[in-house]
Each structure stands twice: as structure tokens, then as C-alpha cells.
Length: 83
Image 1 (spheres, one colour):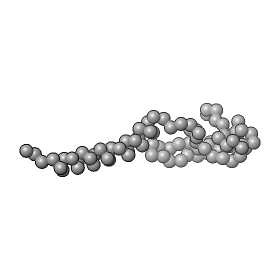
Image 2 (tube, rainbow, N blue to C red):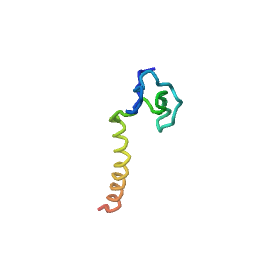
Image 3 (cartoon, rainbow, N blue to C red):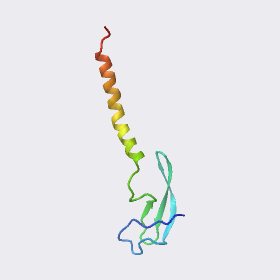
Image 4 (cartoon, helix red, strand yellow):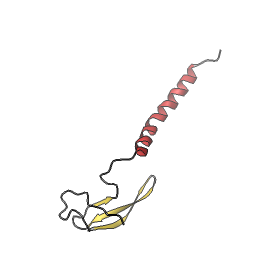
């Protein structure tokens, strides 16, 4: 298990050495492991407090923009008349 620290800033032991596995939770890309700090009781995942990768930003952008592009394309096609 990789070295994890408790993300709770008020944790009395700063979570060092007191982290245990605490089950899983479901995401759209599969299961993610949850951890529990035995000092303060906070649960978290391994990437809590980290920046999202470029893949996540790209997916959010595509979900928002692609439907607009498709809608614009079909509205243009409906307005065009063959000569």
C-alpha cells in the first residue's frame, strides 16, 4: 500500500501510519478504494486533494461541446437547399 496522509488539516496525528483500507465506491470508470484515518475518522480516496488530470477536463469539455456542434451542423444542413 502506498504511503497516504490524512487530508484533514485538523487531524491530531496528521494521519501518518493510521490509514487503513475502508472499502470501495463506484465511479463511471469502475471501483475506487476508500481509506479511513483511524485518528480522526475521516474517509477519503487516494487522489483526494489532487488536481484532475487532462483526461477529466477533456471529457467534461467534450460532453458540453459535442452536442452543440452536432446541433449546429444539423441546423445548417436543414437550412441548406441543394441547387
